Image (cartoon, rainbow, N blue to C red; front, side):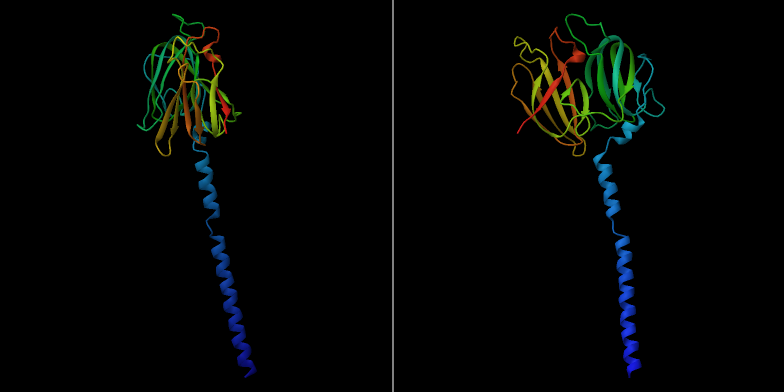
Length: 245
């Protein structure tokens, strides 16, 4: 009888050990690591572009400029620099939901009719995008460093929230003089959320100087300056974001 009881107890202990082993296996298969990887990828949606950026030499604008592994410039994040002529930079995105590209730029010293041209514009370029330039003869693409210091003062171009500027709520101002005679000339801001395919536009100009914007991580801010302040070069013109609570 004692031997039977002992045998039954050993059976229960064995079953308990098997259960523990099964729990251990379940714990090993817990998707915590997978969740972490997904979170990392979501928090850095532009990392592939940052890694693939590669500066170019001067490119003569004889045709459209194509973006791709076999194109004129690799996908990436760049300061496009105009080294000849002055005019418009347009873009055709491979994705219809992509950021809209429309800037005015010119080589240093190529200002005309009191128009102050920026020589460098920040652009985020995806595989399959195409750039069209008008009245611009030469450009080069300067890859933005992999590590950048966030700033509350941004120039013209496309900037990533959480990388180029911290997320938050900001009141806008600028370091250029906005002439009240030109009520609608100043800064245009477009905030794009590529995940939800939503956007919000805002203007900061002499007729609208009390402006607050809210920026969320991984959104893209497209900033365009159209002003007539001759005392400040367009390359030095900054839209200033002051934390607002």
